[in-house]
Image (cartoon, rainbow, N blue to C red):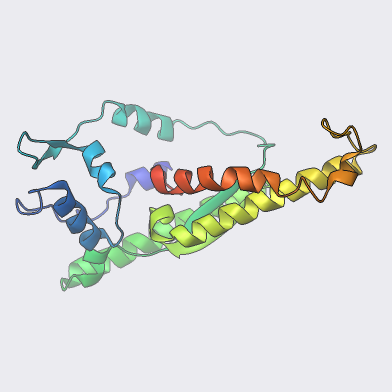
Length: 220
């Protein structure tokens, strides 16, 4: 992560006064520049608003420096004994303003930048695969906000993973010795297989959708 933070990225365009006339206008500008559409609520979170409803200045977050300290002062753990699903944007898709630029310097710099980003992202993905054998590592061609640029793919992989975890836990319990009794019927769980396997996915489907669409996180 330290390598990522030390890389010098190209400076993106800034919104004009016309783009700041409303939050919906800013949302549209942002989608055209970066190539994916964030929820309007994201801009209310990160920008101040004026009394007449225009977009003000960007908010200053006190935790930004703390975040950088946390990310550059990491601790290496010998093992991570928990199940995990990691989705990486590999290879990365460049932001739209870079792709549409007619400036050869911008295009060349962007190409070199994303080559380095992809190398480091693949290094992270491989390290996770080697260090955490139980982890499921997925690589998708997409943007940094992979849960936005590739929302259907992310939802598919999350549901598939949750489904495999549900089946795996049930099979492990049945193979560990005497089947556990069902709390409701007191019969062995093996006799309840036609009822129990679908329950966790049905319960988790709605929260999964909200978690992917409603929260901001990065794959790197």
